[in-house]
Amino acid sequence: MQKIYFDNAATTSMKKEVIDAMMPYFTESFGNPSSIYEIARENKKALDESRDKIAKLLGADSKEIYFTSGGTESDNWAIKGIADVYKDKGNHIITSSIEHHAVLHTCEYLEKNGFEVTYLPVDEYGQVNPKDVEKAIKDNTILITIMYANNEIGTIQPIEEIGKIAKEKGVIFHTDAVQAVGHIPVDVKKANVDLLSLSGHKFHGPKGVGALYIRKGIKIKPLLHGGAQERGRRGGTENVPGIVGLAKALELAVENMEENNKKMIELRDYIIKGVTEKIEHVKLNGHPTNRLPNNINFTFDFIEGESLLLLLDMKGIYASSGSACTSGSLDPSHVLLSIGLPHERAHGSLRITIGDENTKAEADYFLEVLPSIVQRLRDMSPLYEEYKKQKNR
Image (cartoon, rainbow, N blue to C red; front, side, top):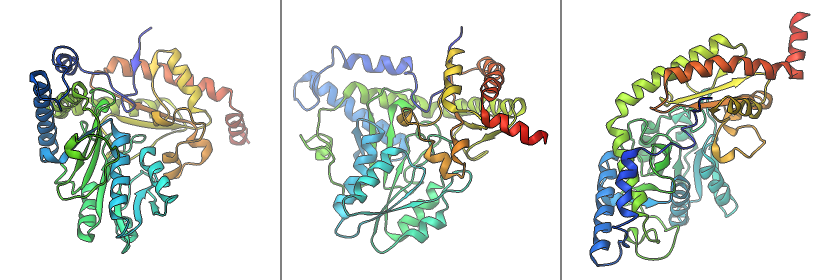
């Protein structure tokens, strides 16, 4: 039985070039970059070169890039760090209802500690209206944090427009770009962002390493205290192999983006067309065109998404029902509820996130097995049985 990986939004495989770039820093060049002898200096050089490379690819200055353990740390640092510095100026934060839980739970934590948070609604496609952002800004607003692209439904936000509003109003703007970086063009200057989070394992880099872009002039408190690493803003011995891999993975992603995206959009749209033609009572979630090149999110009426995933797994197809970070939860996706789906429909979701290595043959196999799986689950559903009775009356 063939194995098909359709869950690239959860994590990606590492490219061979990335592994090759990392290997020397696990073995012969293993020194601590804070030390002064030769193998330490080699690591410091690799660290600096990686920082320069990532900065250039994001349109930033190398002194504006700070390495972290990944997206969750970067989001926490950006939000808590700004809140701590600017709490005497104000205590109001603006975010959206469809953010990743790394942002939502951080905002909830701050609410328990004296901060006020406005959770903006989204439209039926999962987009934030920039006018809503502008209306929500108050005299005590210190931070706006809106994700670049949604991890579940793939909708891309009007980040540049929101950034212009934030800049005009003198409010700091952070974006969780974990799903965007490496998949669509991202330039921090054009996007008008002050802080930006990214994570390597979303674009064929290693897990456990990411970065936070902090615009020059932005004051922020450290999240981790320790040594003088990362120019005194983030203590802890740097993960040199991971950072080298992060830089190499981003370099490859940007170099091959146009070619890869063309291929993935064709495959994405082919799957969407096939599913909607072969199966009734199915809805595509997210914006029909302004979405990530690799993202597909369906809702199938009358079935449970978890059962669908298990049956797909038995056929060798690996997918998800939403964010991997909440896969153990029985609650329906907060993103799907936010775009207006009722609970019973939100439970029947399936997220397919393809990669540049997926093929049309794999898509055809998926389209071959999916209809019978959906029908099998519907045949066991009392909701579907009731629907048929009502239809036949």
